[in-house]
Amino acid sequence: MVPTDADDHTLVEAAKSGDRRAFQLLFERYERKVYAVAYGFLRSQEDALDVVQDAFIKVFRYLPNFEGQSSFYTWLYRITANLCIDYLRRNTRKKDVEFDDKLRHDGDPESSPVDALPASVLGSPGEAVENKEILTAVEDSLKYLSDKHRAVIVMRELQGLSYADMAKAMNCSKGTIMSRLFHARRNMQKLLRERLEHLPEPSEDGAEEPQTEAALP
Image (cartoon, rainbow, N blue to C red; front, side, top):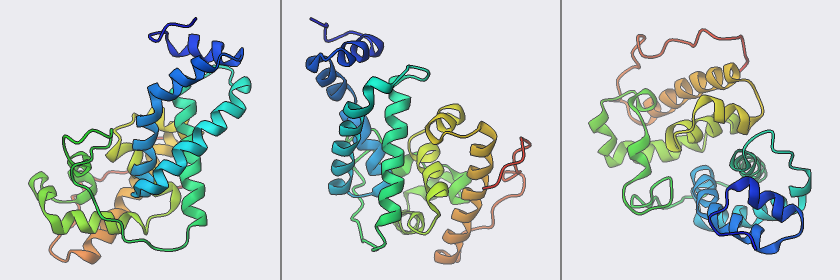
């Protein structure tokens, strides 16, 4: 019997061999993290729960094909992010989602996800993040970013992923991620300025385009 504290690799190999308990342990280990990722993209508890279910159904179906070239969580994250992006593409309706300022990006009711939004996105002093007006504008602006730009903003600013992990999750180069993030931040700033006329222009010193490989946003 696989111990509950077994590492991911051991659980994955056991689950591949048909050990249902090993798969259940993987589900219990990552269910909350997958929910947090999905909620970060979709801003809806109901939709996020649907994605959690779909993500683990896909994992169960395709686990025999998982070769371990990346970590299990990176693979799971990529599946979840792709499901969320597909959902956003299909879902053309605009929903007003009540923002729960007690739900952190990791799912713990300790602090607000807005605490993770840096001045680079808001183009304003850190203390302004506490402003409800700015928070509402951020929530609204996210809906109008492209799928790829919303994805990198959520992954970097709300969930704190590294560029390397983002590149693995989006199946592209680190340079492409940096370029997308640069343009996503500029677009977010533009959307915020349209909603908040008093929001200052972004500093040129803090918005230098990354000197990396050429990549389209």
